[in-house]
Amino acid sequence: MRYRAGMLSVCVIAAATLTIAQAPAFDVASVKVNRSGAQASRIAAPRGTGRFDVTNALVHTLTLNAFGLQNFQLAGGPSWISNTRFDIAARTNTAASRDDLSAMLRTLLADRFHLETHREPRDMPTYALLLAREGHLGPLLTRTTTDCEALIRAAAAAPPGPPPTSANGQTLCGMSMTPSSLNAGNLPMAGLATTLSGIVGRMVKDETGLDGAFDLQLTFTPERSSAMPGGPAAPPIDANAPSIFAALNEQLGLKLEARRAPVDVLVIDRVEMPSED
Image 1: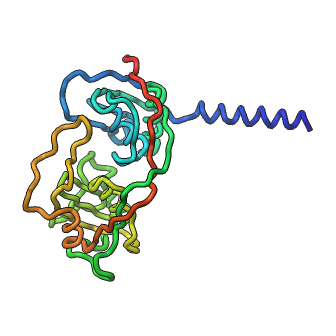
Image 2: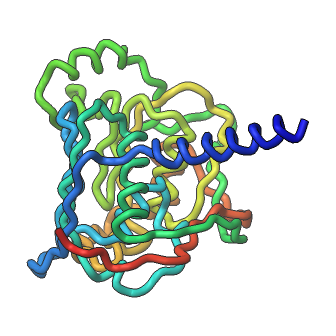
Image 3: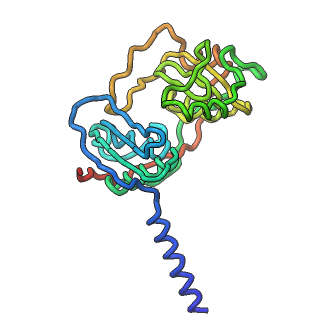
């Protein structure tokens, strides 16, 4: 029995080692500090190329992208993660989904920036997304009738570009955003709640009870600056546009109700400036 227990321990250790060794990673990656002084940044992963290109981006922004977080869900870390910018040229020799690329970016941050984190719940102000009037939708919120599977198949054979739109400007099977507008097609309410989280700076939970997917157009005045730490200045605001709260009610027939709840936060325990290559 002792021999079997010992063999089991060895197998467990070997399995753990194998898991670590097989963590998704880019095959080649170059990291350099960007000293251009520019404010605009770009993160691109052209479909079907195996490339992941970053220009003039902050570690703060890269971490949000790698872990799929909103700005308010990241805490800790030195000031340089929000003011020192980097260029990254990474490649993978295998087909990679968006989730694969996020995992590879997490591995790159751990390997090159020695990023170490932990998660913890923090009590924060939140919002619940609700119907403003039970059983009624706003004039710019309608159930999707587009055959998105057919549209996606057609788009796969076409050059990359913005999501297709209808004759009246409605985005189909995708999303277009500016700091003061949202145009989306085939979007479930949970997806709208996630998008609103980034707009209002709080976690938004869908409690509308609406299933299925929707087309919507929303125009509003930003409640706060849309600029990221160290990013370019926010564009001018149209003072005549309604607030996000009024726009949701008038245009979509929805409302945000203030709540307080635990929110999952990623805390940076360690991060270091990388050696350039």
